Amino acid sequence: MNIIVWEVGKMKKILVPILILTVGISTFANMSELSFFRKKLLEFGVSPKRAEEFLSTYTELTSVVELNVNVFEILAIGWQETNWQNVMGDSNLSYGYFQIQEEAYWYTKSYYPQVYQYFKFSTSWDKSINRPDIQLVTMCLYLHMLKEEEKDSLKAYARYNGIGIPAYKYSISVWEKISILLAEYTGSII
Image (cartoon, rainbow, N blue to C red; front, side):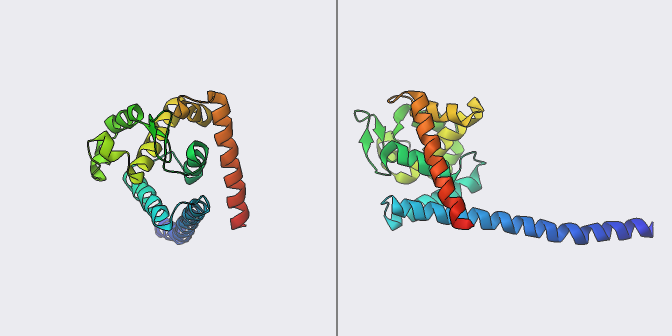
């Protein structure tokens, strides 16, 4: 009996530091990704105030919902869609940094009403879409849903595009941008 207690105690002494180290490394890595996210937004010409808004919205979103979308995908899609400009596109059917269309907004909002309520987003499309925080939340949740449905990131990127350039070209272009961003990121943390 004493041997078992000692072994469990010894195991705790070994596991606790490993757990602390693992959590610490994960937190450091996440913070590095967030720092990289901020740096790239500024390089794309996003104002410091808007970059902080994107960063805090993403951080808050990931604390509210488990999200299968990372900062590299966000950066790549914003780069692909508008080169990080808050503009209207597709004959005024797509809005903002991520070219959100009204159908995608309502579709996403219908699956995640609690998230939109949490962020106190308006029920009006016209009032909502002009807000970059709503654009980011909608883009992340929409891409998350597509990735969960498709089980393949390239297919999800292709579906995200919807209209415009052929889907396979779009998804390859997004993937290339993610690769560029990841190469830059991994080079910056080595």
